[in-house]
Image (cartoon, rainbow, N blue to C red):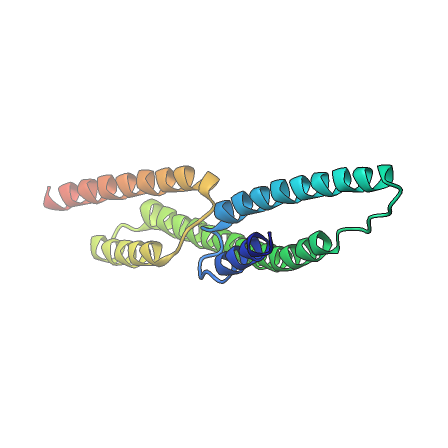
Length: 171
């Protein structure tokens, strides 16, 4: 019983020490479920032992080992959970900032598409915007499709306009 007790805590510590806490979240939740099942079974056994002791006229104390195990496990689990939440929150903030950057780049591209008639200046602006676009990191998953589609549509408009300007220039 003692080895299994420490096994839960040690396995949780090992998972909590991983570099990518987001990817081990599922493993930690599975371990917590197994741990809680184990605790429930141990508490059930202790209740049965208490009833049997009561029938014999004896008093059986609380199972301190289970209480200590729960305390040790949840001390590590709560630290893991707080660290993981902080990472997720920071990632959300970063994604929102990246979304603002991409929207700003879309607006810059709209300006180029709408107002730039000098082909050289337009291509230079396009290259700068495209380079910045590629540098910007992830954005919120639910916005990715719409933002990418808007950017792609603007690129199509840009290249269409450049084609027209060339044809006019050649004519």
